[in-house]
Image 1 (cartoon, one colour):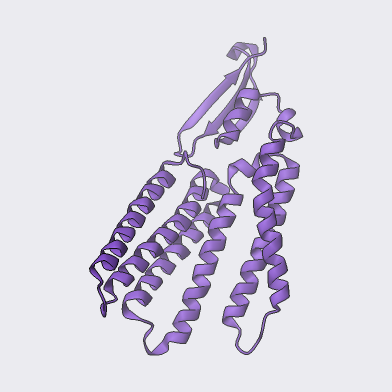
Image 2 (cartoon, helix red, strand yellow; image 1 turned 135 degrees about the horizontal axis):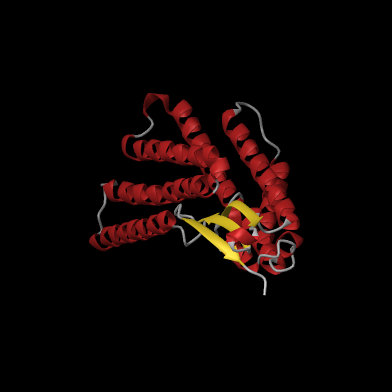
Length: 250
């Protein structure tokens, strides 16, 4: 999820790998030792997988918040929901749901669904799709709409009592969303050079930087002769570093 050049995401991926390896090692030890009657190992493995899952969803939201300040609220909301879901799942794994399991279980399921949907939306709202041209943005927006509809249907199915959600409708939405998720990156790669939004800017170096995850902060602005001429543009990297770029015509 997200841009592999994001330092925070790199750290999250490394932590996820460590947790998965630790969980796999614990599972191997359980199998080899033939441990029975004690489900602590199984709970530990479930906890590790849960941490990995919500660590990645939270990191996707945090990455969106850093790279697109205008959508920071959505990114941090995803991160907060992921954190709350993680805590709830860990409690459920180790302490059970208690006497009021139904209400707690529904709330946990809903927050988990929203965390996953928020993480997927954070990826789709990232700079690489925003700056890829109108056709790609249209496809991105359609995929986001399907994602929102799917999340709403699942949340309704979880929260509603005595009401059956049409399985055919859910299946159709799932298929369309999966299709959009698969086609979107392929379409972006295939039209990256031909999109009019990129071609008409006439700032090839800046376009290349935007394609690699930098966000335009200000510009482009034509500089006067007293300033040395050229076209000025300010960009921001995923880690917050600001880069000023000046290009000159030959």
